[in-house]
Image 1 (cartoon, rainbow, N blue to C red):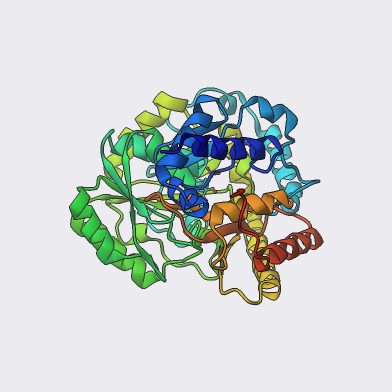
Image 2 (cartoon, helix red, strand yellow):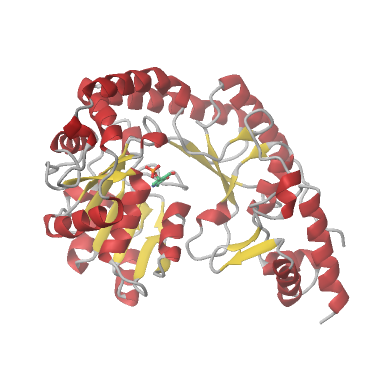
Length: 446
Ligand SMILES: Cc1ncc(COP(=O)(O)O)c(C=O)c1O
């Protein structure tokens, strides 16, 4: 191996870190990709990355890739991107400005309702009335069979996901997910020492045949799927596909976690998989995407057989999800405000999808709910595109963050809701459109 070459590569990367071209937390290309570009071998690139790892500039994670270390000395010199200087398309949350008045009102009313019993320790995992509100919320979007005993309260959907992985599987188990999936799921699975395998998707979502084969081949302990407005692909399963998935789950008697956090974005409710597989499916919904992620209010409908174990895990780890937030959540649901806000957000999302279609006229992309899954022109690689967009003040999420089986995909995900102001959103989209049609794709000197 030519020693000077890997040092030159390391120096070029270091320079880009120093100038902020590779900002803290950004992902570097895979060994193979960079090697192809530089006309060298993956081993040479690996050596350059290792050198920079040792110097504390980079950090590598098995299965996720190599990143610019976020807590390096360089952070002091580099400003975190903010609303003023960046168009941030990376956060999947509702247009928050619209929800502030109703939320303020609910918390004001909640304050009036605080009694000693409301602010003390609660015997079971949450108040009955709060669980009943969860039943009502999920039922509005098609979930059947929820009741005050099988509806558990969690600190958002993320907590529900980690609770389920922790309670129902053990280290070394295999968990199947969609081939492209929400990085929060991959983070839980990786951190908890479970194996993750991505299963193929088609235009209707998770493929039942591929799922069946993968369950058998890997003796999977759990399947996690996002059936509606899937993050990141935007695919929504029609009812027929949900029934097929339920059939596989029932036949194979394997746990299914149905992360249905975007269910309120359907124009007409489509029954969740849990309706067709109530003994094996755990249904997750939450107020994070419709109202506010800061509430940390999640609802988990579980099969009767697992309620005791899940309640015990909740009590052991967090005692219970904060009842004070669930007072506000319950007020919002009981007054109907929660549904009104969710509906408003759905309409805003529709309007914004239309705006993107007017701007990205030459690209065939999926727009669904809050985000779009944008295929990149052939000359762009996703991590590179995201990095270059950031240099131009636009933050998008590279497709590689969503790949369950490592590798990459020539896509980026754009949230349409995290920029509140419509004119600013349009400016950001136009900026991206210019980058998409440019042909800059070489970052490293030869
Ligand atoms: C599919 C999916 N599940 C769960 C979450 C996390 O939701 P919460 O904020 O309720 O924990 C997200 C957030 O982006 C998500 O996209």
